[in-house]
Length: 139
Ligand code: ADP
Ligand code: MG
Image (cartoon, rainbow, N blue to C red; front, side, top):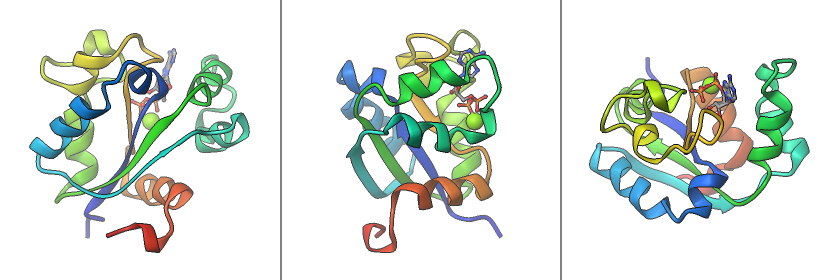
């Protein structure tokens, strides 16, 4: 059975540009309920651990440096088919290939600074949610 939630982040670039409110409004309008939310900042080591699966890729070091460069918003989002529907809402990793109306199309600055993160599977949604939120922080 599907998990019923996904894990998302608003990346440092989008936070710096004050796109947080606009992005949260789009998420709510798309039918996601915010089950947990926190403003936080990753250390370099935490970013490296979060993006462990990409270790060794040419963009890994730069990505981890960027993701630890400033505050982020971390989110637990509840909806049926949350993982799949949220990936659809954010659009392609590369904003130049993202469809009109997607969050990345609207708010990304570049392939790296693509505004938002969304878990790509139920397994990763659980792992990523557990990375940030304890049970008392989820409602
Ligand atoms: P997604 O975030 O869509 O799941 P990936 O898991 O493949 O994409 O990559 C994680 C993040 O790493 C991307 O969101 C993006 O910020 C960055 N990234 C991915 N590929 C590249 C690349 N070729 N060059 C620079 N940054 C990249
Ligand atoms: Mg990914």
